[in-house]
Amino acid sequence: MKIVCERSPLLSAFQTAALVAPTRTPKAILKNVKFEAAENVLVLMATDLEVGIRIEVEGVEIQEPGSIVAPITQLASILRESVDDRLRIEADAQRIVIEGERSRFVLPEQNPDEFPNVVCFEEQAYHEISSRLFRELIRRTLFATESESSRYALGGVYLEFEPERITAVATDGRRLAKMEGAAQAVGTRDDNEVMTIVPNRAMQLMERAITEVDANIHLAARHNDILVRSSRAVIYSRLVEGRFPRWRDVFPQRQESIQIDLAVGPLYSALRQASIVASDESRGIGFEFGEGNLVLTAATTEIGQSRVELPIPYTGAGVKITLDHRFVADFLRVLAAEQSVRIDIENGESAALFTTEDGYGYVVMPLARDA
Image 1 (cartoon, helix red, strand yellow):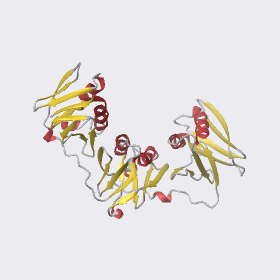
Image 2 (cartoon, rainbow, N blue to C red):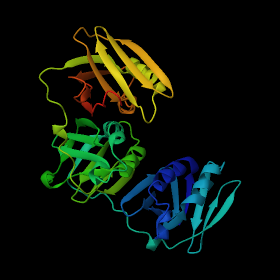
Image 3 (cartoon, rainbow, N blue to C red):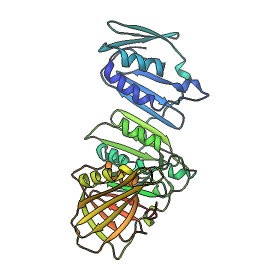
Image 4 (cartoon, helix red, strand yellow):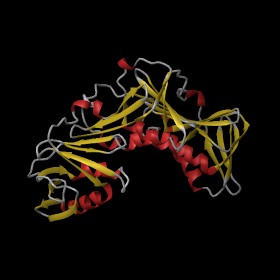
């Protein structure tokens, strides 16, 4: 293999691919990234056998097709530290040579035939969705998953496919985030037999690898895995085993509750102020909705007390609920400051419901008053 390429796009693609490679594995070949140069296209591949990626690199001149397997640690450092704008990479069966105008590095080569295959996207049935919306689906749900739970189904984001819609849901048992958006089904598939729970790590990779702001991507959910294709990358992931909770049952159905519309920015600012005295043991923030005012309070024996007032458009009876400030902050953090959020509360013992006009819903269970 012999190529000449721009260093910056190669570094970006290499760093994304390297996220997949395992740091600890009995199969040493997986600690590398495979380069495959053919037909004026350079494709980088990485996998840990559960998640895999194929990513194309722009601005590459293929002088001689071929494949190499490059060690992640050394090549990442070369690409990052080099001051050359363009690099020449040449390899034979014994070594890889990376040259710039003012540098030259030689790395050992491994047999590229030993690298596991990373699947291509060849599905005829899939959903098409804007990349901007899909990244928003990930950003607004991923934080609510449970990474350390023994309930494996909670360790990923559940994707529900409809003919013209995709819904993403995540929960850790104490809060639940749901985001939905328009998508178009292409071809036919059997939705009823697929429980599509995508692991956290794969969702993080998808958000990182999908960068086209206005382009569309394709998602194909199969019985044991999911494939995602953008204009320059294909990501493969095995699905999380287990059954996802009946998430629709979590959203409260109420006859009587208070509903208040607030701007995200001022609410988030007041919450950050009130949580200054919170601790890991005492993380509850009191939300007291009263006549024209929201009062946020917190108290921790070893730290102190806080009281923050926020004017609100509310004229009804007073209601107080105690919520984990971290859970509320997670929700507000992924929204724009100028956005509006509706808070739906019935009493201090029932779940709080947060919603926005663009299909985002968030349910938080209350804490005991003395938490």
